[in-house]
Structure formats: structure tokens, C-alpha cells
Image 1: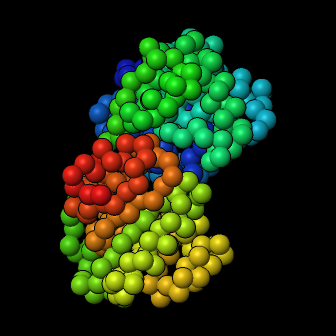
Image 2 (image 1 turned 30 degrees about the vertical axis):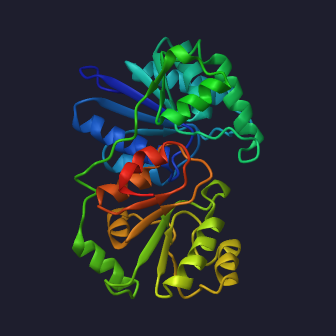
Length: 323
């Protein structure tokens, strides 16, 4: 990977490029960096992913290392160092625990300044894989040695990690940003999507946007939907994200178990998030842990009120505009 020498050069190193909050923030940031004259490249420790395709479409070069999360390959680690030396970036920004550690160490050995990015809040053993906690703990040990700065996307994420042992002097909070040119109130998009789903404008629609994962707590959303339909039988519920389909047997059983099969719309992954948000009357978030959820900012930018659990910075994000 070669980055032009007449511009500021930024190399991003991320654990993988499947769809997720941190991955989308990387895409948004790299896109804006390109527009503003920075020369940007991305290295993924894993392989492929939808975000890789989106980055390449806007001209951002991407290299896959195909490295296993469980058994990092030293040959591929040295390849990462060679990529860094070839790209000669002014700064390396790493994303998430594995990339912070592996990309950060490679950058350090290559003599390049490193900025760590942390987009995770909960370090509870009940809701995290053991490997994740081990990598986070090793990261805490090296946090005073590798990064010039540690950027947290929320105040709660910083508090949790510094209590966990991350070096306080390096910490900075930079909240996620949103492109208001992409997310805004759009009545035509609202009408179009509602027609596709067979809903009129007067039907109350509550949505939950998020992949299938225990931390997202879809079960609580289904229980809340049952309570709501006892008062408003016409209420409809729109869910989207990875594995949010009727083929997900566990999710389907939850919904059918409360007798709401006809009230739920499971849309799977979507690329038309402005239309999704505008179709809602309320955007809900039932997560057990979050840092700074993109879906809240996107919904609010579209003028949609949010009902959230008090996790991460969610309550501060919605302020007096939601619950």
C-alpha cells in the first residue's frame, strides 16, 4: 500500500470490516478525510466484509491480512509492519482491542505515532467473551507504552476503561459524528418504506436497529412490545440488523411466543437507514451495554424521538428529547 507523500497520511488498522458501529464510523471518517485532502488507507486484520467494499468504492485502499483472532500469525504481523513502512503514514489510528494491540505494536516497531480507538463500554465477564477480556487487559498493560492518545467515543467508555487500568494521561473523548447531509427528516422516504411494509401513515411504528447479540437484548424489546400492544393493538415493530430475520429461530420463537407475529417486521441488514429511521415514530434501544450508539444520532437527526436504556452515554445523548 502506497500513500501519496504530498498529503497528510493516515493509516487505519481495524480488527475486521463487517457491519458494525465502529466499522461504520471508520467508513464515515475515512470518507471525510478523503474529501478534506488527507491520504487515507485501511488495513483489516481479518478478511473482507461489506465495509471493505464501501471503502474501495470511494477510493480508499484496503488490505486484508486474514489474521485469526485466536492465533495471530507472526508472518502476517511482520507483513503489517512492512505495509506500514511502505505507506509511511504520519499517524496510525487503530480500532478496537485486537487492532489496538496488534496494529499499535506494529506501528510502534515501525516508528509511527499511534492513536488507539475504543468503542466498547462493558467489560463485564457475563456479557463478554473471555478472549475479549484478556485482550482488553493486555491492552491496559500496554496503554502507557504504545499509544500517543487513547480516543474513547463516550465518557462512560473512558471511565470504565480507566477503572480497568487504562492509562489516564492518554485519554480523550471524541463523540461519534453524523453526516446531516445523509440523515434528515424525509417524508417521501417515510411514505415509501411504509408502503413497502403495508403500513399507513397513522399506524404507530416503533423500531429497533441492531445486530442479533445478547447485549442488544431483543428479548426485552419483545416483552415491551407485548405490553404496548395491550394498549395499542395496531402498533407495529420494525427490526433490522445482522441476523434479524425470521430464519433466526430464537428471535422468531420470542415473537411468536407472545403472539405478535403479525405486528413484527424483521428486515435483516439494510443500507437505507435514512428511510428506516424516517419510517419510525419511536426509535428504541434496549441494550444492556453501549458506548455511543450511532443509531441514536441517526434517528435524532431524522427528527425521531428515542426511548433508551440508561447505558453508556445514551441518556446524555437523548437529553430531554427522549426517554
